[in-house]
Length: 97
Image (tube, rainbow, N blue to C red; front, side, top):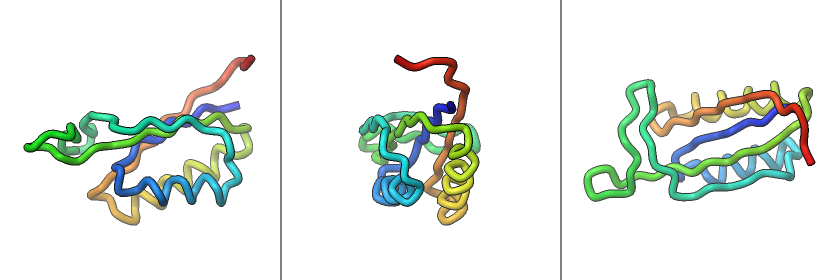
């Protein structure tokens, strides 16, 4: 199994939820009001007057076979509007309870 953490501008919330629905990924944890700054020339997303935008985060655990399609969908979403930015990080899950 793989865990995938998706960090995205809140403007993409509906698109990310739709992507998960299309891929039939039912289980996830959603975090709102995530602050940060991207490593690829990203501007801060802090929810302040100077940096008003905010991010959200979704963490999901999927079967190994689902991971490539999920990452490809995330990549397509990022290419759709690179200025907004979407990032995904994946790691192995050794066990669940």
